[in-house]
Length: 201
Image (cartoon, rainbow, N blue to C red; front, top):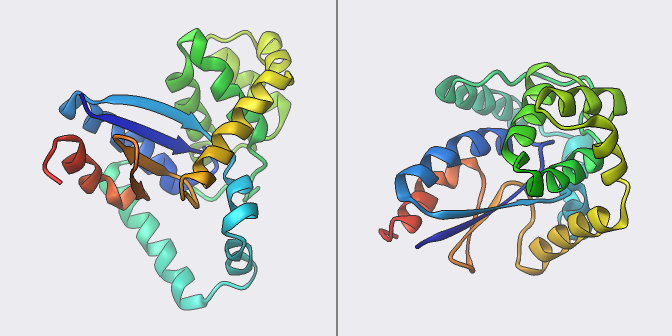
């Protein structure tokens, strides 16, 4: 059976697109998937600091195309992706929560709700009151989740995922690995991911 590892942070619109589109690919290819929450800011700090310069001083031509490209993709996929008033967002609590939700069988519902809350409802998912509402919406106990994401074990798990991605050559979100070492980056690489999972690459 083919295996896909999906390293992701809910703070990226391109990751939101990939998150929704990779799930039908998994169903079609019957591949195994490992969801790997990361902190993309930690990746940028380590290996991709130029992203901060691009945000501070964007080339107007590239920025216009970026906006068009994102609109085209959202229309193509049928997602509502707006402009959150807080961007980039400090997503470390949200991503810790995604890790904490996995043993409870709630990783996918929580990640989906976090994407929708940030990119659709345009709410700041770094805020505790927003997070607790999202937890309750997907059937997680808010008090238990807030306590869990403050534990060293969850903090260390998120850090370990992030460090592992960097060590394996990753530089952003979403990063995907097929069968261990075949790396793909970005939403637009999903057709290649599907081909690899199906053994056609």
